[in-house]
Image (cartoon, rainbow, N blue to C red):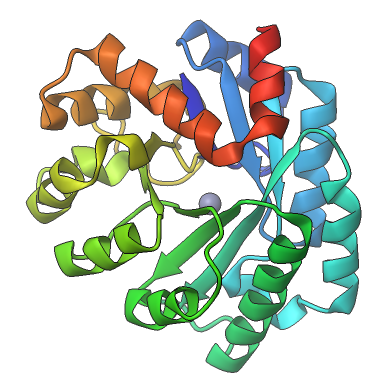
Length: 260
Ligand SMILES: [Zn+2]
């Protein structure tokens, strides 16, 4: 299984990343994509990708960190993209749930990183919270790029719009939460070839681990729930999800997949 979004670069949550990688592998999660949220965490993601065969990195500036985004950040991400194990720009986007950065700062960082990804031909991983109706028009007004909406939490109508522009949909722990029937309805509708699974560890633990610190090794609970929603055998679901992740992240990821 491939965890397409986790934060092994959170050294407080994962003081021993080597152990975390082993524990994940033992649970059948043998490929991890570690996501940056600012310059420091992006550098750490790349260092982990260089250290572990089963880790890849995504570099970029999270909307909550947009107040620290600068031309230097952009130059760093361009430089890091040259690394063969850096496979996308992210997580970027808009977050109007938290107010750690102003909407203006968030839009500036978003536009600059969209342009950078366009220049590099890099796929993009989005964080979007309480902001789909702001983010989707931005993307609809641009030339199409490969997009992944991490931890999808939008309505059916927003999902249809995201689907129109070719988005992939990241499925996380909340799919297992009892109250989330609307989310499960949307995920039953999303085209099968646009789904990927992720833990977002150390956040958003799936049932039955809610209340604990999340870990990539809990990914199988998300795979099982999604297989159930889609009426597929778990193995069949996982094969489809792996194929989707490979198609989204592209040759920098799949050339390594071929070796394993
Ligand atoms: Zn994240």
